[in-house]
Image (cartoon, rainbow, N blue to C red):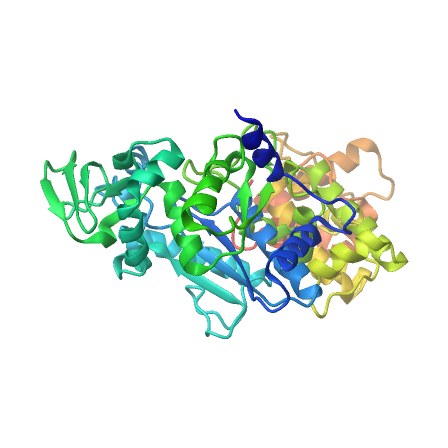
Length: 509
């Protein structure tokens, strides 16, 4: 690699660490490049090959944080969410997914119901996060004056939005091929007019036509429908950047490494388009739990933004993504220790904000909504303990901690219901002995009688302290529940506790 190439590649990762947050570095670069009058357009793009997951969200989170930094600096800014549903469906994925049967090598947007469902779910998640504006419709479309736009590339290609630029690229295929080090014919593929699939070989490029052979249906023909001619990914990206006048775009570090799209296309911008390459915000991988690799939506199983929102408020999630430098990898896990650690870190962060620590205040300004406060809340470990000991009665715990803790209690409750080994789940097969003495509970308790009580009431060997059971249910109800098991083999309190923990799930034990 030449020295110039090495310098250019390293420049993608250049960052001025003197700013109070990394988002301000990219915002300042954009202001210096375009001046204060330009409305900066930041694109976040992703392909709906599967449910959008916590890795995909880092792209949007980076775009949002730079957008917020620009606004804090007085610069007008717009986020463009681009769904890359003109990308082809991999035949291997179509073979695995019954919903994609028959769609292999066709555009993702051709599987309309599936693609729409995936994209709409992500838009709904971004609305709940406070990122996509509430006035957007279900598809993310907004009025023209909004600072948010959503584009669907399958739709935009087929209505001819990019045809003038596609023609320009076809005319310049020879020069583009030299700049990218590829044969011109390899820079374009055609969605077959006959079968709609992209498994075609480009045989000859013309200014307004392309001759191709389809490996799927055997067609050998020339098309003048330029909207069906899709540039290879590197060119496709530069085409859309040029048309939309995109100024900034986050990109995973795998797209910014030596020889990657962001590295190779610098020559396209400099020598063909005579324009700036967008300011790139490189970001590291998001790993899930103990997985070594990045999360994959197309393979399935990736944690989604909805999974996080069940157990965390939106501002904590933005803190989770905004706290590390965008260049750093980080890991998300909903196991007990990392889950509690995230809440502890967030509480320390809010304490720093209250104390006026500059970097904490800067991040809080980027992630906070209008009604966000920095008041003290009970620690997550304490909230989880109270829910366990009060038999998962969230309303009772909120009454103890105060209404300000309501959201934290509800998030803790959702985490217990989905991600924790709760005491009510630890059933054993032992048959309890007779516990009542003279029709009442024992006056003195031993280790053995405690165990008998829990076996009788819940089918477990342990549970909340007896004083807490007395407080939650009362002595008479405990006696009645013991009799219900002794007389009929029923455990009504177990059913009540399970209903408190997982409403509608029935007796999981």
